[in-house]
Length: 440
Ligand code: SF4
Image 1: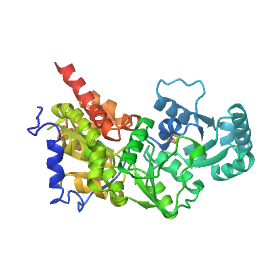
Image 2 (image 1 turned 180 degrees about the vertical axis):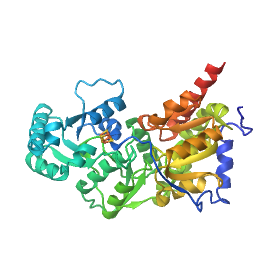
Image 3 (image 1 turned 90 degrees about the horizontal axis):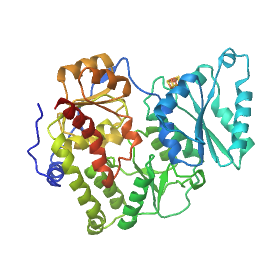
Image 4 (image 1 turned 60 degrees about the vertical axis):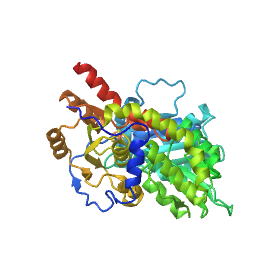
């Protein structure tokens, strides 16, 4: 049965819960059970699909097996590229048997690639399970190749291996590998660094909002070009645009940067509080901040209301997959009136999630880690209206009649910021609307 919300339209719902924040600590002090068991996750190579679109003169060379090549091709879907910016150097039987020198072969391959593609300015050697099993030292390979091809091309490495990771850790590892090569900031004035890959349209919107507020200078990591690496230093204040960047954050802090604590910019409320954190750090007067965001905020609240009609009162269950589960649960619960049955997260970073936990309903069933069979049992028993999970679980659950949302899609689509709040809601509304149509 569909339970519909009795809450008002427009901004009424968000305003009501924002006021309640003052008296509730949400899930701040929640004891979160830790599950250890079989996990259903994609590996970090997946991140290449959105990262290659973002850094437009970078190339991602996976050093892996045919399985790795197939994974990337499936994640890339039906896209056809004349000049792709990612590829797999396949480790074959001769390499695995130690009959060929992988380093020599890698050097030859990279030289051929860079000769054919002079537009490449940054080459990532991406490690995989097979490269780690044969202990191929890609960090030494990257240093050696950098010496050969600098200053035209810089070569870095990171691991996308999937043995014990989630698919969003690929982006974290990639950005963390960039931090040591960022130039040192010399300015004595503070600067803002937005950390996490954002679609260009979102980045442009954020730039406009920061400019209107009077916050700046602003830079983004990753940048659109390897030639535009942002400077970092003790006067850098950074805002995380994605919740899964623990290693990148640590590396930035080692360079002196300081994090501005905020929820993540998902939904109207998350975006407003995220922007407000920067405004407060820059001592922007409240009326100027309110004026800067008034129009896009009002537009976003209007656009959200049509999705709330369908989603309010429905029950959602999150399997741990993308590390975006907590901010998404906060958005679905507070802005769309959905009821949270269980919110699984692969890892719980208490510090980075503090502002999010504070906003979650107090009785939210949070779970860290995964024991997939037990979680499937709970999910079936609770019969939620919508399950957010990875592809490995989505198809079998659909076959059981449970409506699912494939979590990776949340990374492939522009979802942050005011203008994307309704699109984000639509990603959850679409499978439910389809199910309703099928039932009619
Ligand atoms: S899990 Fe390992 S072997 Fe499989 S695609 Fe990912 S890196 Fe390659």
